[in-house]
Length: 192
Image (cartoon, rainbow, N blue to C red; front, side, top):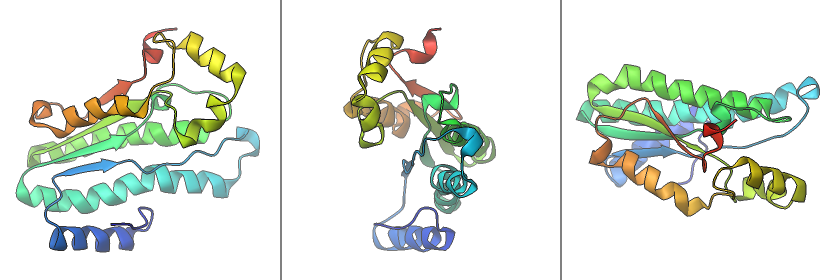
């Protein structure tokens, strides 16, 4: 069902319709996100707000609407998509880095509040993957060379390589895993 995840009333209405017409939401993956690069000293307040709405507010709005129902059932899995940028920064992406750091800590907060109700809330922290969001970086020879040298695996990630982490966090195998971020980054954060 398509709806605006940054619009709290739209989220509440959509989650209600899904639960009524389709069935209980047992697994939620918060995967909406945007990136707007720019020099921080010149970064527009409107663009900052846009990133926070898409990357942080949406996670809160959708998770809260779904968690209220999960709590009543005593079970549920919430998987937030963070980023390796929750732990590291690069030039021109400070607002994105701030938003993903917020997702990391919101994940921990959700765990702290909702684990006692039978919910597991975790995050996946992708590294650099070949996606439309990163297409300009993929096509930049200098960045591509830097990334391949910087990443112990020596390459970009492929989107399919995120599936295993999502399946694990959505399965019974992760029932005692809570408030964690699973980095899928080819080893970037493991090295200096």
